[in-house]
Image 1: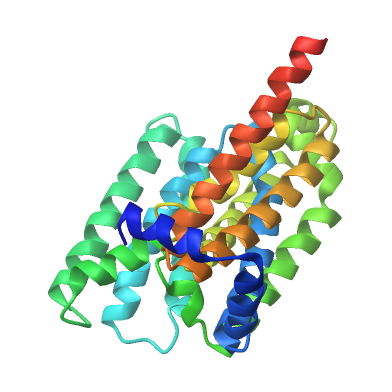
Image 2 (image 1 turned 180 degrees about the vertical axis):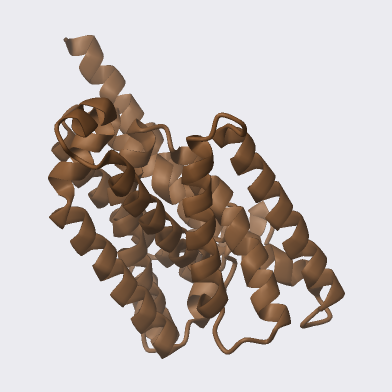
Length: 297
């Protein structure tokens, strides 16, 4: 779709036409599935995003997204009934390895992340070319990397799996909220007071892996970091307390993801990039509010 076509489609839509068109699209079960899954994924990503940004672990999400791409390519080549069967355990294992490597003096965390992410990305693309599942390999790669249509093609079983895993992530986060808070701001102090910082970092790594795998369906493997980073940074422009930032981040993430999906459905743009574009607009908006608030002070 060209820029001219996009703006023509936007200008043609009146308020009544938008409501009518949305009502028409919501008659399709796949659209309803996409919206439900998207909201859950956005909410979970925002919860963990604040902790990852504060702990400077944002790069782990990006590295794991490349791992998930490679695993997806292998799962597709093996013609598995569901990609989750292979992608989820492989991504979780790599998350644990990345955590261990960050504590290894021989291979630093950033170097290990670069090695694993680049290696799995290359292997994934190689496997897709050696075992093409369609005549349009470039299109398959683009869809996996940028989430062009993935979230609109979920089966009922995949939707239930996404919802169950998302609820599990939410429960774990709120049950361990105080421990996560302690580990996020002062890991050494948390360890000294008896909090097993390594154990909670391990739990966080596993949860991150789960979110990355789920988020691939919405925005693709290359854009998954946006779900984690942008809502947290947007909230931090205005709020300072941990709790306020988490609540604002969750609200920003859910609203942005919902608006992005609806726009993509209405005007026919790729789902993943459209959602990320809305995140960027939200970040600019909160940055402006933070700037103006700072001037008043």
